[in-house]
Image (cartoon, rainbow, N blue to C red; front, side, top):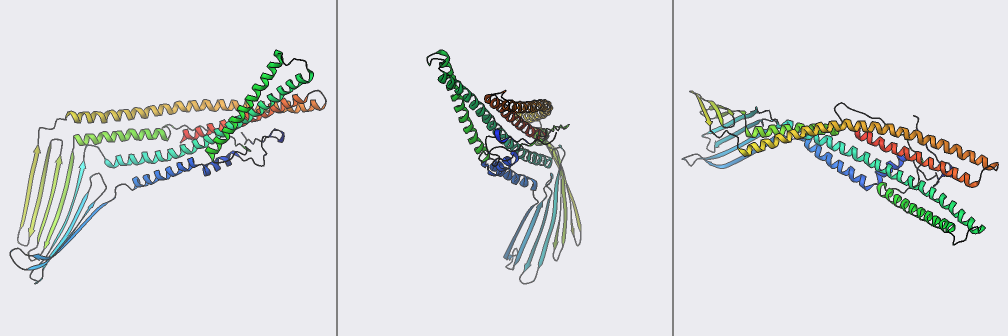
Length: 464
């Protein structure tokens, strides 16, 4: 369908086209001037700051400490010296919270009799076998936040455009009503004036009284329509920040219905919520029934007159009510090597899940099932909405055909009435009536086009 340009002829215009602007210009201006829309943009920008914060996620943790004692004394003597030490701990942002420790210490006596240096390096990591991953949970939270932020802004923008379109449509509807009310009032005035001029009816007769009452009713209808029109103009100004100057051009709606197998972003967010609920359930299970393996090790070196190297480590496995660990080590000096091994275990009969833990686990399980049901419902509703929108497209296309046909017919009748009036076969009243019908049909077509543009926004929201 070619692009539709709707122009009202000079004889049918309500406002001069020199001040009229296109619908696209109205929407663009409204986005710039509307405080409501600008607040929406500000909220979106604030939301993006939160998204960037989540994207940065956990940083590598670094802790550094240092100390100096310039009045160090060796045990049992008055010999003084300098003792200085420093340490650093680095924690990696992974599930196992890998930790690396390093330290150095120096002791030197002022008389030069002794100097020693202590070096240390250690690391630890924990493996969780419950299936829970905090990084997966964080990723799901980030994805939900990002999609929700972008979806909310896109929906807000399209809904704002719809509000502008609908406000314009209401204004055009009132303009049409005013024109029809003015014509009806003019015709009835002519009837009453004719009665007064000809004197065919007494002013106390039922016919005359009814005619005057109808005239008053039509005047009241016109007054009400004009008041409603003024209110619509105020509403337009509040929504858009613009003064109404008329509508010059309406683009043809693009009614493209996009359907995806897995639904739109709203459905995707529901699926992410369901996945997050699964991770929450795993987290509860991990807390109630922990199963993890911890590994740690360290190397310490003392550099002095009698150097010593110590190597140690720990392997520990822990469950709900038991744990077992092994701590091997070795100490190496210049004259001997001393290995060591310590094995320990712990068990208690407190492994039965408490009532409180059962309730917590059941709550998490129900939340997981509920989130999955919500996702399935959202996907089903998505396809139902797709079918509904498909029917709306067909209905609007039929309305457009009828509106265009009505306009073409009304214009043809108006032209014929003008020709017949020139030849004396029609009256001025008939010509004005035909012109009013053409004007009404013009408004109806424009309103139908605006309805289509509103539907276009619904389709775009659906496709997000």
